[in-house]
Length: 242
Image (spheres, rainbow, N blue to C red):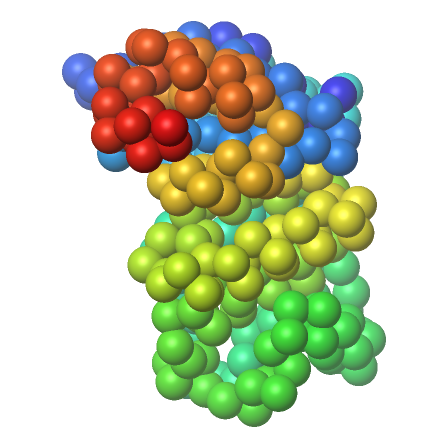
């Protein structure tokens, strides 16, 4: 198993952000995580990457417990991630942004640059390598966020709303990129509100509501689950699919 989350609970004062959440993600999967805003999705990502510690529960990555590791150690183990709010280093080039990620695996500046160039080519961003991060469009900032994460050479990639704020054409492009990343051998754990992407990309989907997992199954099963429809999808989603 690539990632196993066992009974994870997280409180912020009186707020129960995660309530005994358990998930298993197999190697090679694209596993989706959906739910209303404030359901605990990004908190779960933060717990997995140890930006915040859980109060109860265990997390195993490739059979080893990682709950006591720091964020940089988890990255070195092979877990990379993007963030919902993309924040490139605005005053340096796209290439240098990605080189910073590549330094996770090498101290050699030439090798780091070579690996960064390869990542940019992989994501069709190489033509903009000399642009400043702050001058990119939102769609290209999303690609840059992906590039920085891929430069750390993850085995598991956590994608936090990578399609948020994009138009339909840009969403199609990112769906293609996610498939390309999966086909390269990287397991993907994705938070997304764009249901067409979830339905097309994921083998399995889990649903959080008020910090609790209320459903898990194939995209088709989730789309028909009455509790999920009531809590998140809405009747208009069902009508739109019929």
